[in-house]
Image (tube, rainbow, N blue to C red; front, side):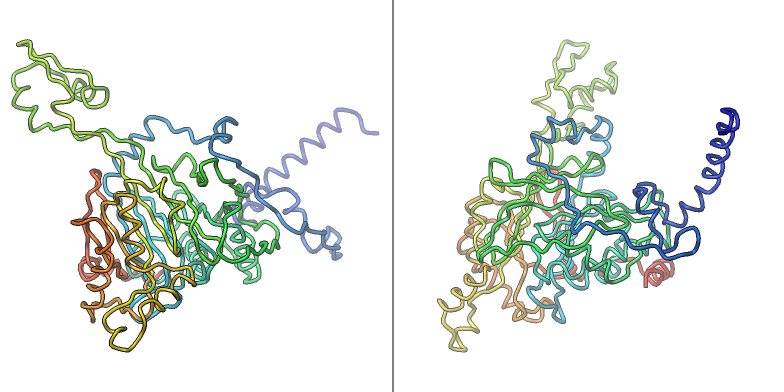
Length: 494
């Protein structure tokens, strides 16, 4: 037995060695400080150089369960943002910009990629579905993959997910090449099966993600037209994966998506779609924001008055009136525009979105699939209108008339159609074809409301008051940076 003093010295010596070795271990495992000890202690060789027997791995690493947003809040784990963080986001969230990265259904065509939509909010980039070729679209648009914070997958059909594994690798490669203040952390949301599929795909591809992290959140009990197959649960948690939650359906039939404290002041609900496989749509609702202060009307009244700027802030934020030296009272109702609250609904594959109606009411912008349509060329080719629509319905898809009717039922301000059959080119070569599709949607929509047929590279800006601005693909591509620096930046990612 060693004396106590020598034992304490030995412990201190070991601790010193471990501290010295920590940077090397950190670099060896890709800088991940959150790897469990058992991961670091399972190399193929033991300290004598002999091969160790592999540990028996569990069959599946499920996520932890979130029963509802209310339960989460009661547990003290709900999203708690500081007032300063909210205000910072308000300043950056003036414009929500949507860019269509892919508008085709089923297969990539010469003019349309598979489904994907990018939403830019300040420096944050969210993607909705990741069809094949999404990484190439991001490069073409000079959108940095390091800005991607969240990815929302509507369902597990290939034209909505096959671009996801390569996108994750692209994000990791961009960080290794260019660096950033923090390693990428991407949160991915979707129905059951997404977690297992992504784990197996990345692991069996021998992917190395460096210091990048990802988290996969699954929505439980999403229904489908067909008999629901039980998800195939295989694969352990990835080396670079933070265990994500399993989200149960709320009492109102929708799922509250946990976004985290760093997200903008937007609530995201997943809503049930009626499709052949478990499918959800997404409804994004901005927290109410104070209306604009009409300073141009106030300035003449404040001339020569001893009114501090802080009084203007209180007038807008709290409705505190300003009393002038002459006794006149300036009230918020007279100088502050009404509060605004933008709502965006993104509905991918579905033949009936009626279960989402209560959650999407009053949407400023509804993006809805319209895979098939009965056009004049179909009539000339002897096709039957009823048969075209029966086939669309049987495959779980919508027509322009179905999309228009749903938009009418929720009083949507704008309707954007996407997810078009390969029969409908997206290069503007046949403008009459897309005009006819818009006309069909208008026939069931509200008079005077805008209908847009989406094209790849098209952008839609949703302004704070709920109005929209549209940039056609030609405008978007013409405004891209063409400098030497931009070209070098693009080449670095290949």
